[in-house]
Each structure stands twice: as C-alpha cells, then as structure tokens.
Image (cartoon, rainbow, N blue to C red; front, top):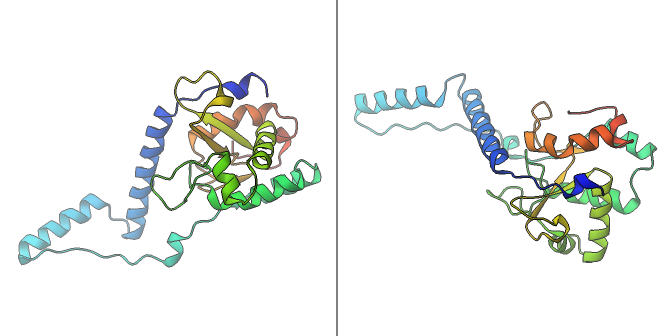
Amino acid sequence: MGKDSKKVIDFGQAELNARKRDFEREHKEFIQDHNGIDEETLHEAMSIISKATGKDVGIYTKKSPQSKVRFAQFLQKNWEFLREENYFTTEEKAFLIDIQANISMHSNAVVDDILKRPPNALNISEIADIRKSSRQVISKIVNSLIRKGILAKAVSGDIKDVHQAKDYVLFINPNIIYVGDRDDVEEHLILIFKNQMKNNPVLKNLPQKLF
C-alpha cells in the first residue's frame, strides 16, 4: 500500500479539537432551540426568577423527534461516478451499504453503537460477526477498500507496524459516505484522506469533493 499506509496518526490533538467542536455545536444548537438566547443568559434569568419566587425554576424544551434521527449521507454524484468507473466490486458495494449503519457521527469511524458515548471502534472480527461473515472475507474487503482510498486504518501511539496493531480505528472517506455536516468536515478526516484525494487517479476526479 506504499509508505503512506504505514503512517501512525496521533489523535490526541485531533480529539481535543473534536471535543471543542462538539461543544461549539451544542452551544449553537442550544441557542437555536431557545430562540437566540444562550445557556448562560438563560440560567441567569432562571436564577433571578427562583430568587424572586422562592421556588426552583427550570425550563423544558420539547425537541422534534427528528432531532434524534441518525442518517448517513451518500454523495450521490460521487457514488454514480465510481459506479461508472466500476471502482467497486459487488462485495465492496454490499459492505459499504451495510456498514453505514455503524458510522459514527462527525468522526466517520466504524463503531459498535452510533448512539453510545463514547462508542467502541470495531475491528475486523467484530465487523465479521455483525455481517455474519468470516474474518477472512471481511479482511479482504477492508484491505481492498483501504488500497482504494475508501477506508483508512489509523492507530494512535508509537506502533511501528500498523498491520500488526490490535488497537486501531477504521474511518470512511467522507467524500463517499459522511455522517455529519458536509460544510464542516472534521480535521482528522481531512488529514487522513487528503493524500488519497490528491494522488489516487480515480478519487481525484470525483465530481463533488468536501475537501
């Protein structure tokens, strides 16, 4: 897979940046849910009312049921382009369609439960169990998609041989499938896939690129 496939990425700073961005998103969502009033201002107002009435005062905001819905976004024109290029095997297409149910929001990592915080990254054996397939079959598909720049295997820490690492995370190229804000792609995904997007003879010609 070349030199780039053996690079080890330290996600310490990336994780801090992701947490900061999550906090900023939550702050924006709170303001949107409360008609432009930020959390600090609202709490201050509740405190004043509590003192004035001598009673504990709280606030309840009813959210739309749709706010809890999770969905993966297939970039349709890119998928169409890759289909015309015969880029995927039938097995690879089935794998990507199936695994989208396990793509974590914003991180685009393959995890056990998209609603759990924090979720656990899935390894080859666990993906095989989920898909009711063999480890050998899943390993073949995953390695092929890594070579094609659709998946990336990343490890943290000082590990010399990425192929022997037990503690790793699989990420999906957000230019193919993304769970998150397409206008605000996470920095770690750009770092992981930017070389593939620039150097891969097929991916560099995708009609729609997020970075």
